[in-house]
Length: 422
Ligand code: EPU
Image 1: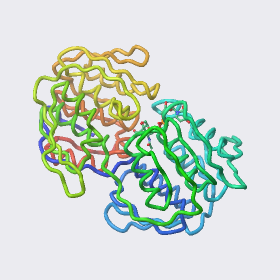
Image 2: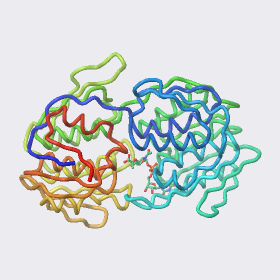
Image 3: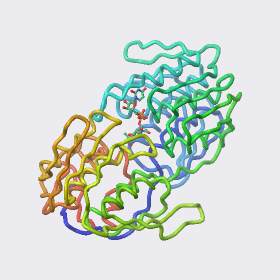
């Protein structure tokens, strides 16, 4: 993407459905033979990857509207998630729980490392073993079998894991007896995911909190479910408004999912206010810079803490603050890949272990930079939108994993950008 920086972004951005809810929701349709319809599914390459995998497993898939998909897995033709699918997208691990629950066996390629860290799946495996599955790691695959089904038990996650909690929710809804997940992930996507399972007939209590209780049932049924808005996308466009000294209205987001984030923005001089509440309980939020950007120290943490998925974007914002800010990444060990690229644009950042110290300057200077992962790619686009002159972000395809229609959304806010392929 070629970006001519320095133009204040003004306009409206309709927030898309949350990728990190849509992915487990698609996987959850493996739990029933019935037809499921999922709405507000964002058009992203990660969603396409998940649909390819589900199709490989035997799912029939129909697009029944611009962002609506009908899925039915009357029969599961394969219980194997091959390496070629999993290497493209780690969230493929989300088919492990439902396959073991429904078919009593599964073979899922180990995801391996990724750009932002090692990201093990040991906690998913250990929890399934506690529920009675026999698991062997063979030739790079997790081979799980539970010939007598899974059994409810207490699962105490030593660290909060989002997809781990979701996988065990899916395993537990069809297990014999009661499962208690202790130190469950409390992200809004996890709570909404439990709501989807409840709509399919599951018995779940305590979701949204740190202890979730699931009473196994014999079967689940089909449903029609709408994915909630993507809080990370909303937070990203909020920073786009602030960093360019513009004003953006985020249409159809959930303000309360971003409360802490907007509070952090407020501390740095950026205002956000709900201007309309829709009948679906969604909010239109106006975001603009009210003062010079002040330094704010942040530490990433599981929800309701500062989201790791907004850390790269916030780091970019801090490159033009009037002081020094410290940003600590506590979730992933390698999530500062954007920092050397921002430094090439003139940012003053040094990394000390898990902490980046950012000393602001007036403006960054456009140049060629390289995206390494989804959130790093968007943080470089944000840098380009604010920088003096022309920025070219290479390997931008990472952005299509998590930002629907990003070019059109930015262009609609007057951004001077051009996407091209070399
Ligand atoms: N972890 C383990 N073992 C496990 C599971 C997790 O060591 O078995 C560690 C991870 O390595 C990490 C920490 O626990 O250090 C938390 O990881 P978590 O499992 O919560 O991450 P995830 O489920 O793989 C989801 C999102 C990520 C988001 C994280 C944290 C999806 C599909 N992905 O990943 O989203 O960063 O939670 O909130 O929901 C993104 O959208 O850019 C993205 C990376």
